[in-house]
Length: 63
Figure 1 (spheres, rainbow, N blue to C red):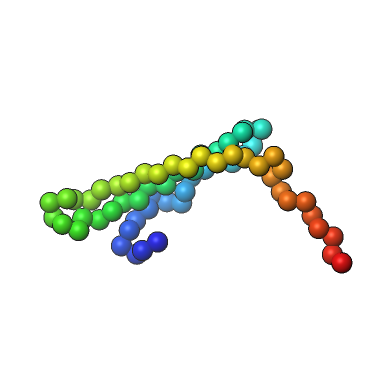
Figure 2: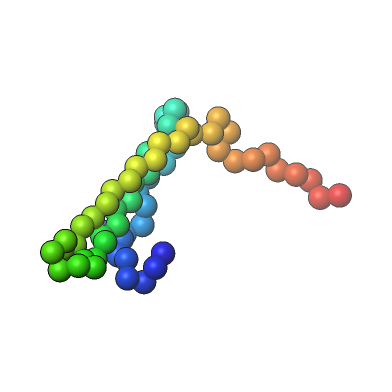
């Protein structure tokens, strides 16, 4: 991400635990004022994703 943008931390997402069918991640970005009249603004985005049925891929044996 560009150095002049600030985030409110890392994207927050609840882990896929306890048989949850999905999880939601959220991130907030503060956009600095480019024009004095506009002031700083923040934008929040969320993404909901299904939890995998098997959290880890099957192990492959070495040849």
